[in-house]
Image (spheres, rainbow, N blue to C red):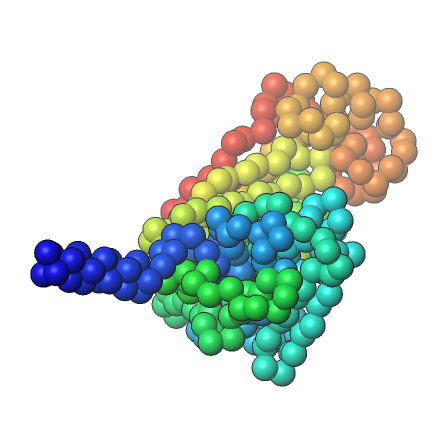
Length: 348
């Protein structure tokens, strides 16, 4: 009988130790991040969260501390956490708690005040934002580590509540390196017939960058590519091996064009614009869209006719010579019933 009792006692002791060693593997407090995967240069929020912790008349205060390592912008590290939702929602975090912060050591302590109770078992303790490094050469990460020795939950009497720090309580944020490329060479935007006299009459946008014409020649504007402007995988899955940009070109009194998803390739170096857009680096736009509605029709002819002899300085002056007359009208007749192209053309 004594032997059987000793065996049962030993088994119970072992079970008790096992339960203590792995206490609250899913319930408790831990660090989390939103989102857990970001592109380089993007921001994310780190939060210390507690789940399924009995709080009513129990958890009255806490202390947390986290350390950061990896590729984040040091200048974005805040001096303190932002108060979480520890207090009752009807009270609000600012009015319902007392906050103590040690920015030098990174500690953050908060206690409810008076006899306020918290009825939620899930609550956030504090949070802060970080920004991932830019100009990476490979995928990287930022690791947020809970300083376990500095984590304290307390009841209203100042007694430590143990066992509520998760076994796994740290978090890592993956930073995706964005492949980059830039365009080289010149891009020409020209009319199908009209001589251009003013650089302000022509627009060219590549990948969100508006280029300015650098010189004016007969019928054309020439745009020099900006080697300092890097194109990233904006709008496409990160690290999928492609660098897609959009291109749009427009000219006063002309039909605009747009080209979506020009693939610059996964080169990480300069790409010749002549091989990607237009024909041998030239986009040719059709003249005659006096009302800028992406087609050339009777409405354009009527608009020009009603303004002959004036100089409004807009799309009605199709040829850009600062006078509306029959020289503008002939372009409507020449390109009558033409719609704006959906593409600026393909490279040679």
